Image (tube, rainbow, N blue to C red):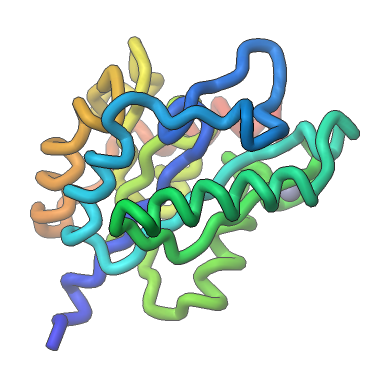
Length: 200
Ligand SMILES: [Zn+2]
């Protein structure tokens, strides 16, 4: 039987981590959804190390009226099925459709995580890794007590290395998963304070 300590969760941002970002716009149809190179294969390799995998994504395009919830759900069905066909089961895709500053779920706020933790009561955010390509993801990871992993050129957090892709980050993610709980980041208080003013 799996020890409770071993129940780690992987949180993934969507755009820029799993699929190509759309420059100056929102991925709003399945045709516009394009997996980044190596993502499917990498998730296949990561999946055995995690008890649950979730995608948490800000989709303000809905709040702006640029896309509908229906089209987003179609994209997420497609994404879910493509990964399932490859042998990767995603336990949930949670999204925030709201405009910035109007809700408690848009990252870096905690709402999507608390919602899914109510449904999946075995999820312990302190035993999780959160992969994202935006400072909002890293800030959320810190608030959750999760281990942040940054995809991009320069990490916004000194203690967190940056990787060009999920594939490049794979070994690091596995190393986080297999490391026992360590003291938390010294920088978190400072980052939280700085973030608080523009977002609240
Ligand atoms: Zn929201």
